[in-house]
Image (cartoon, rainbow, N blue to C red; front, side, top):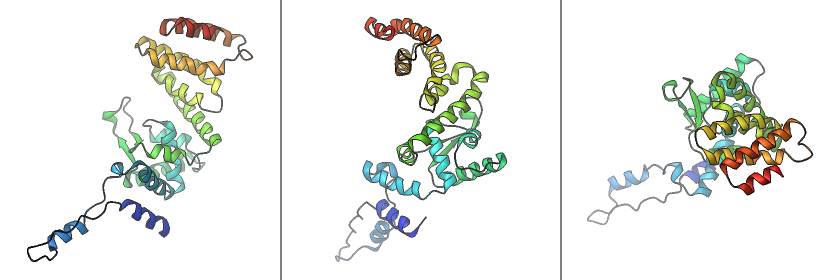
Length: 257
């Protein structure tokens, strides 16, 4: 961290005005009061006003090393706790060698944990038994996303979707939504359709009707008349029938049109 960044961070973090010292009977400053006010800690970061909080977080993100920033960007785009293995497979700017990538990710995660930016959850607290990592304060997510360009973000979504796709065969349709979510925002949005339909079917079985409807709606821009050939036309008809059970006749008609 540069001296200028450190100075600006200290100024931003020390925003609370010091408490007025307590005076003793003679009107002198009580030394115990002076010590208490001079050693008072700044308030927690989540108690700062939003604008000032983001200014602090931007400086903290800017102070990250390239591997730390790459891991933080990947966690922000993943949008949920993920394993170190997934991070090593998809994060950008890491060494080409597999072993070096893993070491780089683990070292970056350790530093981000020390800085209280990233947290971890052990196997006993997460389905599947894998230790996962997550961004501790959600406000870091939009700040980290600011540092990722549009094309890079789409490429990272695509790689994360492919990582989830590798788990789809072993975990059934439970992770279908993750595949759909990232492919829909990736470099090939139309590849998300079959996984979106699988995720929507799962939502229907659990009566999460609004979630299913949102998935169906997200497919509409991908299925324009010029693209609705062969299997895509069948997909639209299938979606319209399902939508009829979820929403109104008008919505189902719009799908058919």
